[in-house]
Image 1 (cartoon, rainbow, N blue to C red):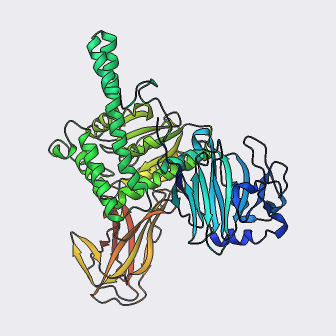
Image 2 (cartoon, rainbow, N blue to C red):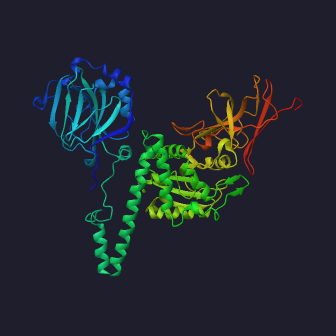
Image 3 (tube, one colour):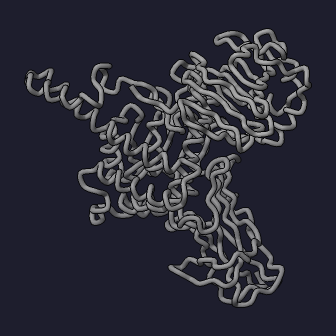
Length: 564
């Protein structure tokens, strides 16, 4: 049996000003005293937004009933929007007010728990420092605008010793796949028979294996071997989930994110008989017509670029979650182009999802990478998630599947050297309608800055007085893209003189998905790339740009001569 937390802050944030604005619409007559006067001291009042009768003063909440909007809810635009965005069955929705110097006595609300398929969510709107929610003897302070799951099946009470009312919005809802994803982020796991038998647990599995080996017949030995494999994969999955919990937790510090990325690298290396880092002589970059495909060992190194790893993994997680809502009756197919030896951006997330609902095609030009990835997948017992492994050039690959999500992180700063642009041009038309391409958009800008120094042909900006001149490339996968319109600004006329202390450079900003983005110096992909010019930029100089797709891709630029 898995012991899940009985108190959880869910990853929702609500606009407190809008909640307060809706709250002001309640009239005095809309509040009803809780009928069980023995259950509290002071004032405990309720007002319904969804009730069985559709009346505001009907405050009774009974599970598995049909609930209707009350006239009060119809006046509250923001709370209506909140409820519309909850993609699950909603039952009772109520305001609960505990007056100043009041107390709700200890009690249990039977059935109101995740394990029972039901959740009571609390959104605090007004509170004070002297208000405490007490669950199973432990005190909690709840922040306004946040959202909490409280297993009301456990004993709980509330004490308001302050001089202000404490008002919560309570939402009773059913557990489905949509809301389950948010619970899983917070550490929930469904109760499963991990070893295929309810009587075999982590506590006794070693004894069961030992007994089977003593029996010695072929069936017993085979079962013992399968249990050993299952035990190993469970331990590895738990280890991996501990790392990923840090990476997807928005409250993790940079130091912890850095450590987690290193642990993730070590984790994958330990899954392999020979770590990728020891195969340098056996793995080489592949130089294609469309750019350089990193070798297995060089691709493996990318995981250590911790901010890049963190933000891409978070973006992929959100994208898959959103796709489940867009395509509720379809199995989500993910095409991961340039997956490398670890499948870094998807493999760590698989434990959060159901293999009956997502599948992955792993695409890479290097067989060494695919061999390593296959080993890792098998060690973790994730074979059921895999649709196919394909060794092919992603700039030429043609899919036969409906691709709901395409992931490719095959780039360097300013789209130099690697084939991200060519891969995007080839794969984007193979994305289904309403599908998601990651990264969604990459913008290469032309900027100048002073007080800089050069390191490894990249400029590290020491001051923030950078001047943005224009965007050279805007690779936006929300729009149709062709190779003739990659360069958005083919010529740019300089509007002022810049002396030698100003250095022009290309900036790279990556809009991965939604609010997940990488910008200025956050990782190696964002390092500014210096423009090497014969002279300083002067007023009325015209810079011209074009993109070279072949061999070593890059932006070609020059100052136009007067006679050109």
